[in-house]
Every structure is written in C-alpha cells, then in structure tokens.
Image 1: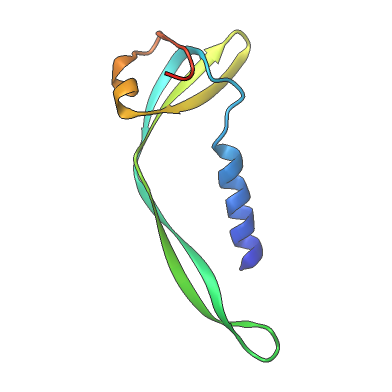
Image 2: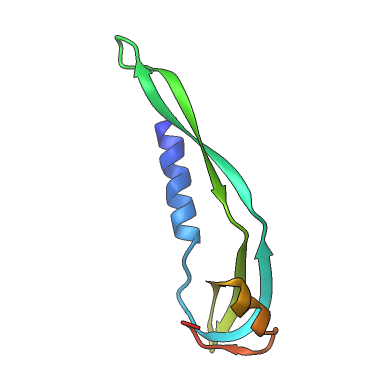
Length: 97
C-alpha cells in the first residue's frame, strides 16, 4: 500500500509541471474538482504489518488551464479564474499574469 501511494504521489507531482510558461494559447480547459483518498497506517501487529488504516480525504478544487505553444515547445499553465476569462484561444499569454 505504501508503494502504491508513493507511486501515485510521484505521478501527480510530475504531471503538475510544464517546461514553458508563456506562449500562444492553443486550448482552454476547466478541470473539474475531485476528491481522492489517502490511507495512513495507524496500527501495526507484532509482525509489523499494518492492521488499522485511516482514510484521509483530499478535495482538489476546480482548476483553469491554458495549453500553450512557443516555437517548438508545448506545455500548459494553470491560471486563476479571472485570467482564464480574459484570454481566448489564439491570444499570447505572458507567464506571471
């Protein structure tokens, strides 16, 4: 169970980054909110095997994403709702706005 949770954490961490932060917007995406569960061991038997698992619920909010392209590089950036509303597909997004 520990290995599965660690693998999930690594995958989530790696998918949250992009190599570029500015570029022409090629798509606008609203990622819906979701909940995920992490189980933490809180009790072990005499052999060191987890006997009691406690669920921890994580609520992820709605996210706003621009897919962007700059020369030969592609990537994405997450922005706030107001920034998301200000731009259209085809506009140039300068990172940090």
